[in-house]
Length: 195
Image 1 (cartoon, rainbow, N blue to C red):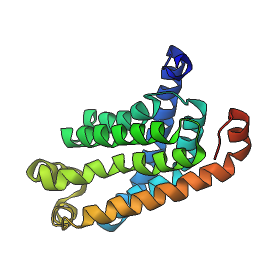
Image 2 (image 1 turned 180 degrees about the vertical axis):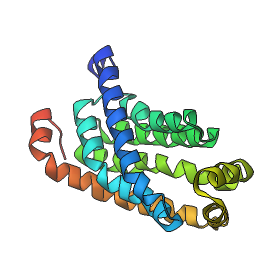
Image 3 (image 1 turned 120 degrees about the vertical axis):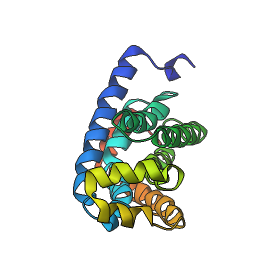
Image 4 (image 1 turned 135 degrees about the horizontal axis):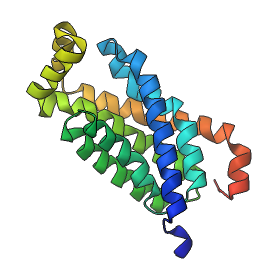
């Protein structure tokens, strides 16, 4: 359908919302990043607090590939800012899954948008995969930024932590999406979104 296709104004909207989302993620992540425990909680808290931004974005741009770009670009930006390519690859995979879910549930489905936010928020877990896949490079980068003691704790996190991260971010995303739904109820009605 023609109205489902991205146009130039949609790309501008995506760019603006990605910037807002990225700045919000950075602002949320900075205080959490000072301790390893805080760093582990950051993706879940981010999924909760960015729910309003994501839900508003999906209501404003119910187009094919909009969600993909929205969740892929922050990971790509992180990679360009110095993280390893693992972050971009992880974001690519998560963004594709989020796009598929968004389309399968209906571009104007509130429940589908909440689920899409919960899945898309998992892009933030990509930075943790660096610990296990590119450990030497990530360790050196972390020592330089945060010091040896912090890097040692981070690099020794057991792999099962990843499962907990995915579960906690998914739950946080559902909570964030519901908060967004409540706060933006009138806007959703105006945009023609359905349950």
